[in-house]
Image 1: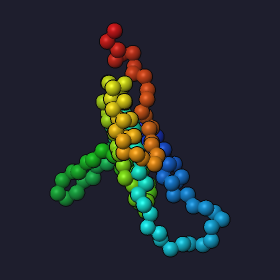
Image 2 (image 1 turned 135 degrees about the horizontal axis):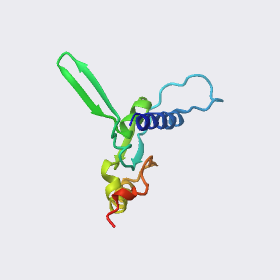
Image 3 (image 1 turned 180 degrees about the vertical axis):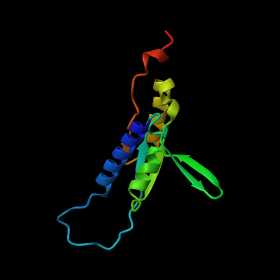
Length: 132
């Protein structure tokens, strides 16, 4: 699971770097310009849903833990870029791939995103999951 978490973090960073890239020929620093939110659709299964990728913190008043979804990581990689997510990643996608995938795609398309990230969306289920 650590490798999956690392993969998600690396891909999120790569995507974030691409979103934050600036034109190298542009003159010096510019004044901040209010940006419209980037509308992203997220499709995926367990990795995009944060399975196995969590943060835990121990404080004086207890232990706090939260899973890190792909949408969370993208927002962390690009803190100066506003996002609007249509996040349809769900860990159970592999158990009901076709119907769940069709429903997720329809929901994301209805949201009219500017881009779609589908890191672990389509994959064949393992043969051990097959009933016949």
